Image (cartoon, rainbow, N blue to C red; front, side, top):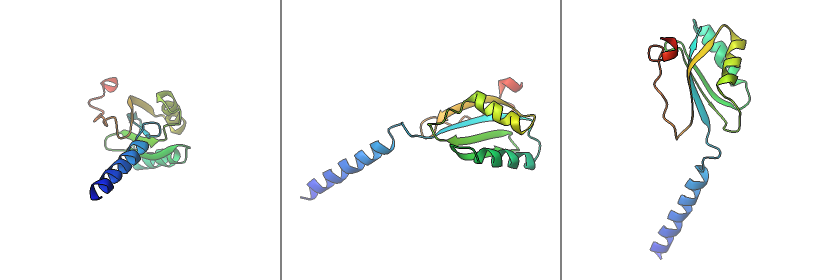
Length: 120
């Protein structure tokens, strides 16, 4: 009897795990270098703007590294061109070394201004 219960629980949890990670709803993320950010106020303005947009779940602009990171819903059509246009609306900002991945599947790249070939 105990063996039957353990098997049922194992199968039940396996089904739950599979349905939560089937890839169709995994959020996506982007990371890139932003040229032109020069102050904490610039960072706050970028984050405040981006967080108000539909599908953006998380937005982080880091001034010491000039790196931007965002997580957004997979059903959005956000791509490099979209991010370039959004950042251009906010100031004289350009994006470089753009990387897009699926959260929980793709590895976060450790890009820096120094390692970005588009800036060197």
